[in-house]
Image (tube, rainbow, N blue to C red; front, side, top):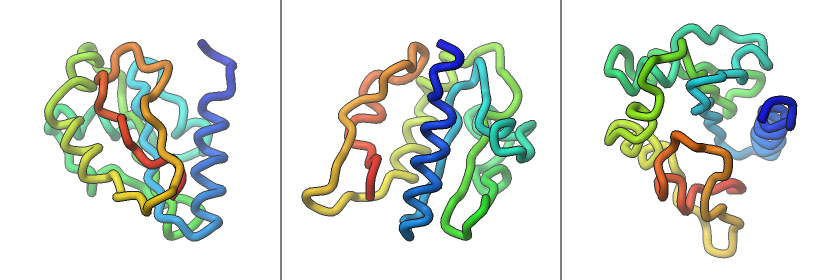
Length: 130
């Protein structure tokens, strides 16, 4: 729900990881209520929704922010079919391409809470900390 600090937490974790030298891609996958671009004060009209619908490539919409190793993929404009886009093969391929292979012993999340439209097991094993 709104005002729980999810965006602030995600941005702060991404910034801390980047500050520590990790390569970070923060993806705003909340296509119904995008907030990362506004929170960071960056352009947010083009983003994930455009990539998932085949209108743009990630290279077209990913933005560098603050440090050269911190990149942001804003959500873009709200699509009518958010559930379909988030559960698409394109979304799965995007996450698999962006996901680093974690070193042994590094913390990994098993799933992502709060993604009612999101793919069930797509984020299983996504590295939270490099």
